[in-house]
Length: 370
Image 1: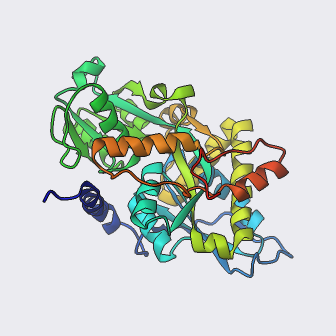
Image 2 (image 1 turned 90 degrees about the horizontal axis):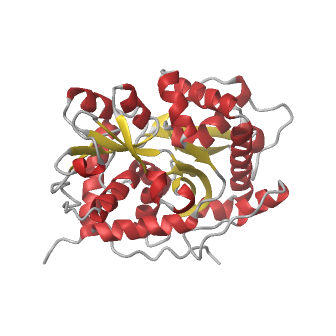
Image 3 (image 1 turned 135 degrees about the vertical axis):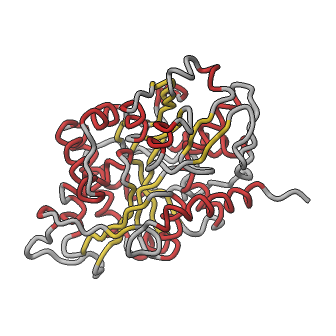
């Protein structure tokens, strides 16, 4: 009998995740971040929420996770959590963050749609809920203009994606299929060679000529442009209204049930962060870069930061209909069996926060818990 494609996906993800996990410091899943920030100090007289000593928050060192970066740098998480400590872990890949969530190493996390879908379906809908949106856009196909001058020239070339089955990998495989080309989703071999490459080393791979381009999120896309690459396609152009979910907020179901006040506090910080980002784009960009520097030891250059930041839209809306479409793309590529996503969203607390802020509520496109 043929090997089940979803099994292949899980095996591939495990292999792809292994290398970055070897480099993570002081933690089984992600790197602990304890960067000193005066804004994160607990205010005098604050009390703990739900009696919790801490809430463990996960995010990536990507600009597409700018809501979390800004909320942390501005001290918004700690402000809303009072005397309950906001603790952080930083991840390089979605599967490792899902593992951390499943094990209880984190409670709430910022993550891409494909890992959320895969994590939810693998656990038969018992481990996580998507409780809010964070960002849209910020994904581009960047190519070597000497080798690829038009979209049709992508055929026969070596194009990187971050990881087998990740959000950008699924999007690229779907785009390839729309061109009428054939690629084995698991091996990446076919009319286009899909090279799964960690975002950290993609710019070096491009500079060395081992890849001809990449379908990647920001800031990797702008790093490639700084190396002489050309944006051939912005993924936003493929979506209605040019909007598609790139970052969600997820929570452990048990944590949501046991500590709704703490979850609401984190969501309030997220909504406040997005509001501030959209009202103060330059200050927010600088804040995100400052947190990236604190987390990684290196800030982004203006030539990378500026174009990357402008291509991302920060929104509280989870854009649930586009998540369902992304799941359909994974099924079409053969990387996922048709999933039942009913119940993946619980937007109750987010809509409570939005109402209190006088903002419009959002919907789950039929994929909510009720």
